[in-house]
Amino acid sequence: MDNAVKKELQVNACKVRMGIIEGVYNAKSGHPGGSLSVADTLTYLYFNKMNIDPSEPKAADRDRLVLSKGHTAPALYSVLANRGYFAADELKNLRHVGSFLQGHPDMKHIPGVDMSTGSLGQGISAACGMALSGKIAGKDYKVYAVLGDGEIEEGQVWEAAMFAAHYKLDNLRAIVDNNGLQIDGRITEVMSPMPITDKFEAFGWHVITVDAHDFDAIDAAFTEADSVKGKPVAIIQHSVKGKGVSFMEDQVGWHGTAPNKEQYDQAMAELNAQLAGLEG
Image 1 (cartoon, rainbow, N blue to C red):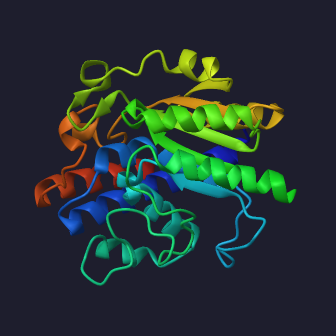
Image 2: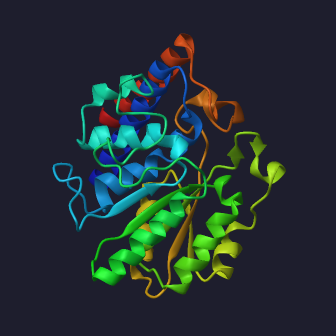
């Protein structure tokens, strides 16, 4: 990847993380940990990969993204705001009464949201339907579905995986955010879905593993995905929950906890320092 492009992505990802913290802090609730872990991939997709136009959020030929792990909506909202779908100031209204930015993505009221999600396991099924529809209609768009590693403990995920392979949905990309933690602890202790790679391969998918915080690796993974024909692609990204905020990193307690004022100030100071380093 070109160094200038990579630096721009790093800058945007840092701004996305700042938006996540801003939103969850002002909401006094939400899910910062898994939002921060997926921030780099969402930034890459919306700023570098996907065929989208914020001025035409319902364009028929656009690429689609389904945030199957819908509780990490702060990440999606921050990316959409930074990409120009709506004003960044709206992030401060997250989960407030009357705001269009509620706790889970809502396709009816939020520009840029392609599917309403929240009940874990269901988003990937909707993504399969979108991908099959594109095949039937002869469209070239791609569908990206972001799942949590705890989410794939849901049986519906594997029904969808079987469906996608059966219909040869090579326009579908399932991105599993493998940060190792879910609400009650480590995934290996709660209900281990391991080995994730072998499972998707057994269901007939092409599988790629990637470092979720390395833009060169992310770019290589999605480039490889585009070369695959006749199979859906699963990208298993190894990430750090709470990435970018030191005291949140790899801490299960930040799955669904909002920072207080002191924690907010520390998080924003760290992110501002990172941003200054990138822009300096």
